[in-house]
Length: 309
Image 1 (cartoon, rainbow, N blue to C red):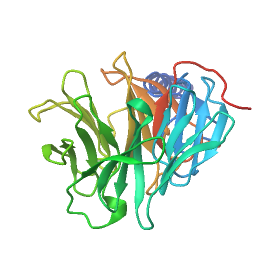
Image 2: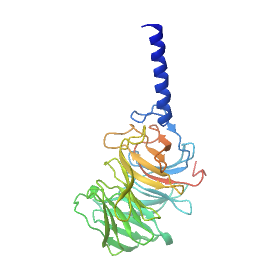
Image 3: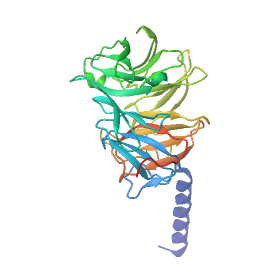
């Protein structure tokens, strides 16, 4: 090869590499991370379904607290510093020194994938199997039961993320039914948002709803009339292929933090978590196959205080 041609080729490679680095997060996301990549710089609680644990990490991405939680999908920090989380066959509350101080166990054959703390120390629990939402007080008494509607007979496919809204209604991700469904407190269907493999949703202050679509590999926002006003498709974010889109957290600045669950054949092949702006710029990722496996739930913390040793 002539010297001039070699120089031209070298220049082209250098320019291409620079352009790639400018448009991708810290590591290409279609390969396992040989070394951890963390640019998100946020303290969080994580529910890791594949690891069967809930974690607390500091802003440096270091695990500073953990609890066993088989089949966990959701985790919350309570006002008293305790942690509320699901473990597929129940819901638990654990203290910073790792003591379980409250637990609800579901019946054999049922599954629990979502919970939410409510005022007065109550906990909302979504039970697949009986296909119901219950609200349980600190003494373990069921104070409210809401029966839901589904065509799915398979327990595991009935529900994922559930939220009680400010108006008292419930927003339910009915995965196999392909719908994010809103119910009132009597169990009457108020609204259906049809999205294939709907995992769960967030109701924004303006009335719009952001939907995580699981294995449909996208995030969709619809207005109250059902019109799609914003979305992220599977390969739209450079270096961040959407796999199973799980739990999400909407920040006050409008950014969205997403659990990019890597199950169903994609473990380790993409960042487990990413933060994206409204104009679809990725501003932080966690790709750490040494500490995490398939993160399903996220709770963003306000600080970096340690929880346990």
